[in-house]
Length: 307
Image (cartoon, rainbow, N blue to C red; front, side):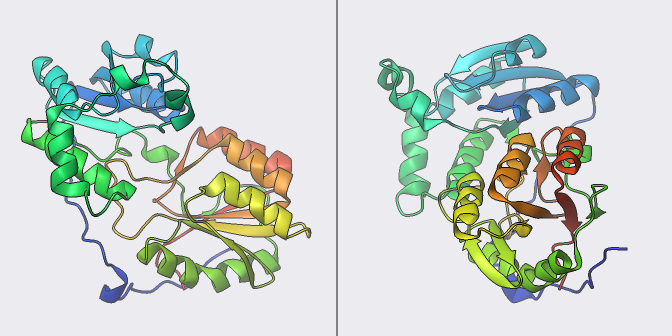
């Protein structure tokens, strides 16, 4: 069986303090859903409803999926830079807990003539920027500022993965397709490097073949890194390892992969995907695993502390 030796992570590895998150409320409870684009907000809304929660959606303007409003108990369009209005809407609905997930497609904003009107920052957003983001505008800093401003208004952000534990990467080989001995060795070789990259907040993924590091993810994101790796490495069967930033804030900063990731890996010639177990969301997990098998790609969940 595929296995890795485990050990403790030295205290020096963790640069960012862990965020202590509130416990999810027991159902039935009103939960806000601040939703960007993609299927993840839809999956979370359905899961919350199945668990007995009422879901009050705030859809970021021109970002959310068309089918999301009908799943929610109530739904409002909101501007991207209007955190104060998010809080006021949720407070009026009696919502004290919220989840924030989904991507923001900047292209949709740039090509819309109403973008300046809909996204004029409100006072709370301006204050949050001045207080928190003048010197650090990385994604986790932005999330922390949003969470603090919502909390000031009585709305606490929850762990975004709590409704979907079954969609997280699990430990061990998840596909019928098993990694080759070379791919197993590559994972063991590159995993300590990935931990260090995550600690330094450089990127969340590394590609490798025969113990040669091909590419490291930076600002371009995983999909473009996969494409770049395919151009750099013409040989098939390379491996990509992906995790989450050290001390990542699970209120929103949770890396995800989905069916399109598998298609991108296949097109670029990859043969194995190694994910940090419990730290990466697999959108439509069963579909992802079936598709990976169909494309001949092994998916492995690796404990983050593995050597």
